[in-house]
Amino acid sequence: MDKTTRREFIKKSGFTLVTVGVSGRAFLRHMNLAANSALTAGAALSPNDHILVVIQESGGNDGLNTVIPMSSSLYGEYRRRRPSLAVQQDRILPLSNPDEAGNLLGFHPNLARMKILFDQGQVSVIQSVGYQNPNRSHFDSMAIWHTADPVNPGGLGWLGESLDVSFPSNDNPLIAVSIGRTLPVSLRGKNVAVPAIENPQTYRLQTDDHYPGDRHNRIQTLLALNREQAPERLYWDIVGQTALDTQESSEALQAVISRYTSDPNIQYPTTNPLARGLLTVAQIIAGDLGTKILYVTLGGFDTHGNQNGQNGQGGQPLLLQHLDEAVDAFYQDMKRLGKDDKVLIMTWSEFGRKVGENGNLGTDHGASAPQFVIGSPVQGGIIGEHPSLTNLDRDDGTVYSIDFRSYYATILETWLEVDSREILGGSFGVLPFI
Image 1: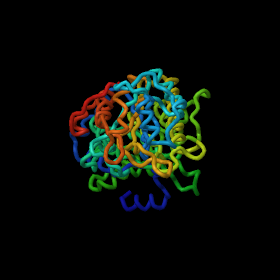
Image 2: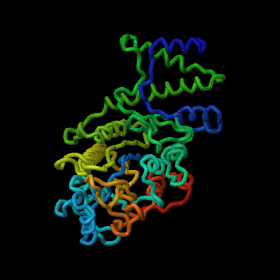
Image 3: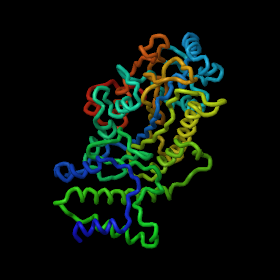
């Protein structure tokens, strides 16, 4: 069958690819593999069986109301700058050990489960994470965090590059997965394509609904057509290979999700979007598909107004509750499955918020903020010290003391076991949280 006939067949058969979210890098991957025989000589083996789960808190989480100062001098300034938004001291969940400067800290009251994990040594709090000359634009600051480049943040993602290094000729279409509609820049690499899966149940090749009984025949015909070799028409074969990858990964994903068994004692709240995403992550990990990186986003942290919600409902407190419930359920699930020692969870947000509240009972874009690393492999505790609330940058933001690239370097070097220098464009100190 020639290519014109193939094109007409696909057009008339009503085939569509469900929203997979594979970026243009998918095409580049196949082009590079076809063009470079040395690259395809042998697939790289994973250096370990570690799995990284990334939680992006999109919008700029207010770190000051997440990890709260309790020492008298810091708390007094905190209350002075936030007369309406400050958490009452008797509601803060005190942490058992101080920061490196001796300051007493506590968690927001909606992080009660996270507090238990901290007490058990499974949470590390990295204080005052940021970078020099912070950018307060959502778009620009996210690009900086995604690419690990504060100067020219237009390149590949830091995690995508790590996959390129570890798996230069990867043939596992689920080596990494983003749970959501779009692919985060962090996962964009040169040679490894990563799918973005919004709903595992619909992650599959779709056929014409008018002919449900003929779905199997149509799928098999499409796959046979796409297995044809046509070296003189590279782009068409790239499309075909992408279809084959999609079908292969969708079949594997549907199979492991159908085999996953839940525990009635572990609840992923259905009204919690992060919990739904982490349930999918748990199902993928339980299926032993060889997935190394999984990525989930929780949005809504751009709290310019009504940050504490209406009558104590909604706002940042609800988002922190979502984080708390979801992470705890996921961690307990990993323990049940015997996977907890192989899984590391990290959080990030593009910036924190200003120290002072605004006139709309919210906070505006700030600079540095704390981040969490969670899991059985974690060396729990507090790294760094709480930022000063009086020695601020010119836009009322807290000054960073830990470069976010040191945060990344620690993940790359000690967990993913790749050389961070090429990916980060320099050498950055490793932090003691693993």
